[in-house]
Image 1 (cartoon, helix red, strand yellow):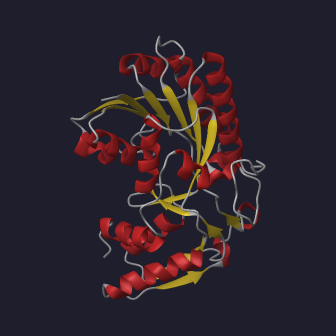
Image 2: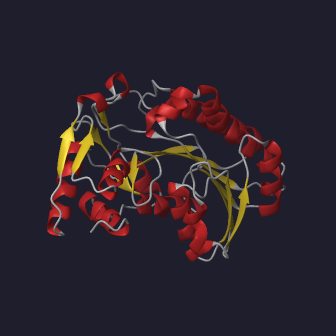
Length: 313
């Protein structure tokens, strides 16, 4: 049994990771400000996890809980994720996405036995490319979110090397699954479906992404307890490329099989212009090799499970 601290453990990826680790018999501590993460995400584990409401921008909050939990491994998932929010409040994005990891690492450095540290970053740090992106490919984020996450990576590298902390940086691609509170494309579709809409309004349907189910992300993250090469960066994806249009076709077919006819409309006013990448697809062979891991869900299976858990089929 390990002591495991998940910073941002009430969020989309965090609560799935917490559930997996609890089910494996670990003692799990969750630190979250509940600004986007929900207490309801943790209700089924309420008696099995230690939860603290706190802000990663507050070193006092962070230090108290790090010392209390005395973790063997720390997963840092807390972030200001939604790109429009980051663009609207760049100082807040920097404080959470850069100063947050720094506070956690400063607190960790005071422990006599240093835990492993896993920073969950983002594929948005990469320079735009039409090819599959490897971890060694150039970085070049062009919006506040990606820029602050890349700076958070640099803080992690510097602090961990300074304090002799084993660390791993993860760059997930397009993570999807049930109950995602960030209004990306699949959550937006689900939201409109739950509102009773049978004509779903979206933006550009042509961008291609590397979609990975949240349960596969949680599975891969859990392996860092014992595996992985310290100091390495890992892409997390499905090693496949799918367009938004393909997503809509899968959802349309699955709903039709359950008796609901829907249509998708691409609306020009929903296009993101220069902020939208034509392609963001990862080469995920490194994590598969180092962690001896493969995703369990193909895209159709993952979307079907998501729609089922959301009560739509």
